[in-house]
Length: 259
Image 1 (cartoon, rainbow, N blue to C red):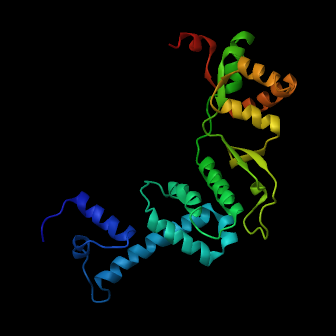
Image 2 (tube, helix red, strand yellow):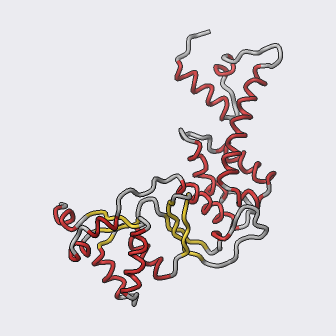
Image 3 (cartoon, rainbow, N blue to C red):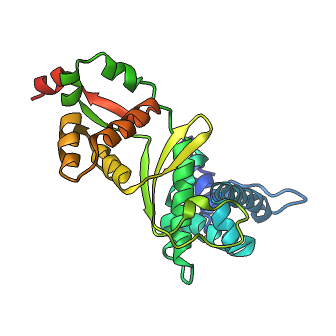
């Protein structure tokens, strides 16, 4: 047999396990034994790969799985695995595209799509690194004027999520679907995994303004035109800085020196 490079060997083996077809080259590299044919030996790896992928999806989407039922969920999972073979070094990333894939599945209740999106955000946020910079200490080191001119934003690990369904009240084994109530959620990392907070209208507005970065002065001016009480703004901002949800992007002198 012609010599084959390690990289090519690895690619053939990967494609033979994750794909539906096996190259002649890949198949020729597999030896049969008295107890197992080449196809059977390869099948063990292919089955193990799919079983591990399904198990990972079940772990990440327990509520979605509960509503679909094991048979339906496993069938959809196999379709997803076939359409999107894992290319990630960590299996934790494999679930990323699953909610979007569910949109292609016919006859699924619409609420289930939001349930899957929400479950993925919980997984994603749980794997985020907790903020290390002490926002309270940074702001305390500045004068009141410098604080107002500093650029602040939601930490990159924080996600805002809207849904017409009360998906945050569902747990694994919930017998009924989510209530038809619009929710606006803030999902942030915590020592216990992911913290979920329902936001009121003005809280959502503040979070939305903070999402891409804004100076405290501009934040105050914008909200004052929308009749949001300054004390309420201060209370919310203080609470979020204590939780490390908000971080300082740049201080006043850094902003002034920027080109």
